[in-house]
Image (tube, rainbow, N blue to C red):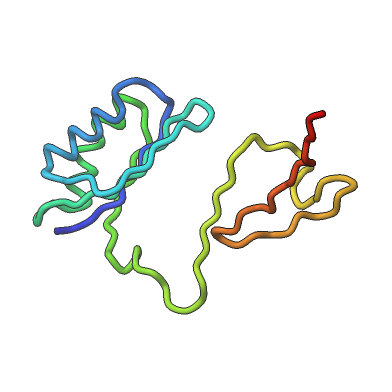
Length: 137
């Protein structure tokens, strides 16, 4: 069973996912991993598919060409191996996730007048802020 990376990029419109997945299903491929997003009005999709023996890059490309032409898409197909996705040796691995709206000029600066914030490791919670006790009289 061969694995292929399929990338699709084009103006966002209805039917892209249906058309591409129909071609892959007709070729006997199974979707193993997917990532889809919209970038400034353009649809971007990355797929890792497993195909049966006898299905190659050329066959998938030939099947996807009519879809690419009809929907004005850029489609790329290439074979990938398990070695590509295997973890490299040596060194520590990290993952970072950043959420929130960005603001120009804020990168690398601490909050004014408060100094820099201490970097925290995975699982560390920020210090609790204690409220002054309220005494009812």
